[in-house]
Image (tube, rainbow, N blue to C red; front, top):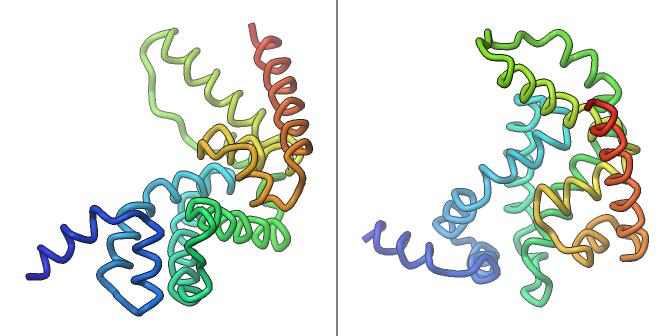
Length: 189
């Protein structure tokens, strides 16, 4: 019986799951968690300078807040915007309490890298590392807009709603971020 309920819930859109969660339906909450926890973990990982433990904690905190605010969701607003606005606000709160993004470069230099055998593998790893460092070194507003738009694949209007700024500002931040990234990556050649 429980399995058939879960299968039925799996086919529902997120907005419908939230309405059921708002009525206290735990099975819908479990389906929503299974559907989004992994992707949100990746979002938090990138937003929090690749701190795995903190990213995992943030996913848990986000889903606790989803349950606590389950009756505040309105189906008229896109679910992804509501979800990522909550996730983004958690990150913003974390930024206020810690200087995670400033310590990223130091932390990366202390991490051990796996032993690699080819020059191409080393070069790819160095490129990925440079890209991560470049993204993390962007001013906070540019980095956040970049990650929300390109990594989380949210539209410019959605990013604008999440960040609480006009769409033109988001476009400007994205253009500036891309120019900075391009310049840094071209310098690597």
